[in-house]
Image 1 (spheres, rainbow, N blue to C red):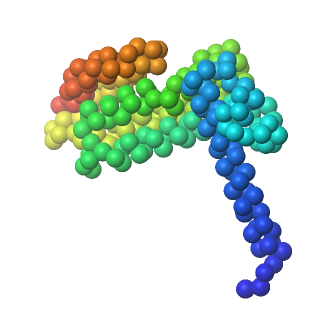
Image 2: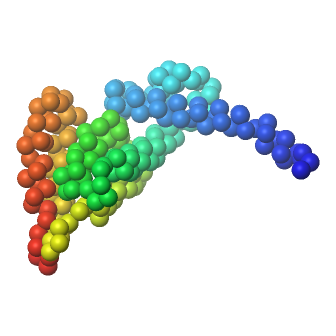
Image 3: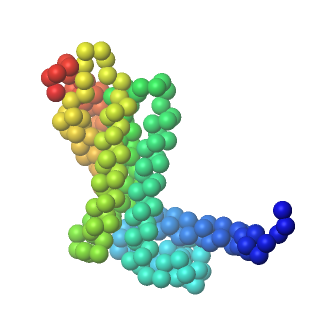
Length: 211
């Protein structure tokens, strides 16, 4: 097939587009790192550029303002959390995981660095109207993904998963995991979770028709 102008341009722009994509990802990685370590107050475009190892000019080419950077970070965090849930579910043995295994996934999700970053943004959004709708959408998306995990739970014959108890169990996993983000000793919090997870899981399954 003869070379065309379009094909030459595509070949010439391919590496450049890939570099641009990688630069953008490095900036988003840097922003997530800053959020997790320094909080929203420390999230400045110069600091993100420094953490990412990217020039200020390149950063401004992708995200001219702090607000544009923050919005992109929110979308990126949402995607990463959703993908992380999918990977965690796929890594479980067997086709239908036990209730306690799903609760463990939720606990790890809420206690991880990605959720720490989104929590920082959620707190900041209370006083910044321009962020509120974006963060609300992100929280709903992740919340729906976690809620959808219940569809994967193995339920014994003659039983069903109670949706209200499921919501309570997920709230318990989130509340316990937040202790880690608030600075409580991780080993202590993990022991607390280990002591309650099986009990929570047992409460989820009720006789068919009872939910």
